[in-house]
Length: 165
Image (cartoon, rainbow, N blue to C red; front, top):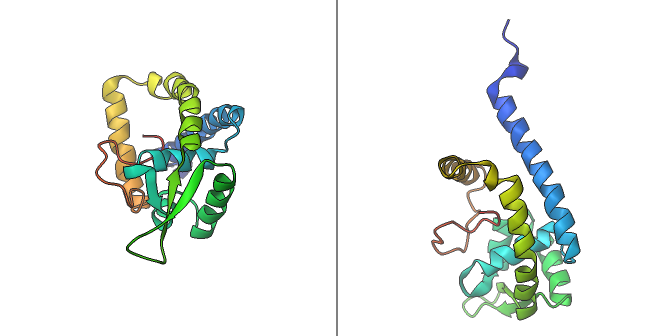
C-alpha cells in the first residue's frame, strides 16, 4: 500500500519549511546585532533595490507578506528611527512613497557583509553553480505562481526584486 506521507511533494514542502526556519533563525540573530527585525531588513532591501530607492506603499505591501496597514506600521516605526521617509506621489494624491534615507542605506550596508556570509555558508555555498541556477529558476516560478505581485513597482531588475535574490 502506498503511503501518502511518503509523497515527494510532502517532502519538498517539508524541506522548504526546514530550510526557511534554519536560515531565518540565523538571519534574525544577525539582524538583531544591527537593531533590525527581519521585516525591517526586507523593507530596506526591497526599497534599496528599487528605482530611486523608493516604492509606493501599495507596491511595498504587494512585495512583502504584510498588509497595507502592516506596511504602514513598519514604515511609521522605521521613519521614527530615521531609516525611511515618506514622499508624496506627484501623480496620485492618495499614494505615497517609502524612501530609504542615508541612515537606512548605512544600516543596510552595515548588515550586508554578515548577511552575505550567512547566505554563502548555509545556503548558496551548499550548491554548485548549476544547482543554484536551477534552484533560483524553480523558486522564481513557484513565487510567481503563489505571489504574482512580488515584483510590483520594480523595473526589470535582472535578479528581480526579491529580498533574498
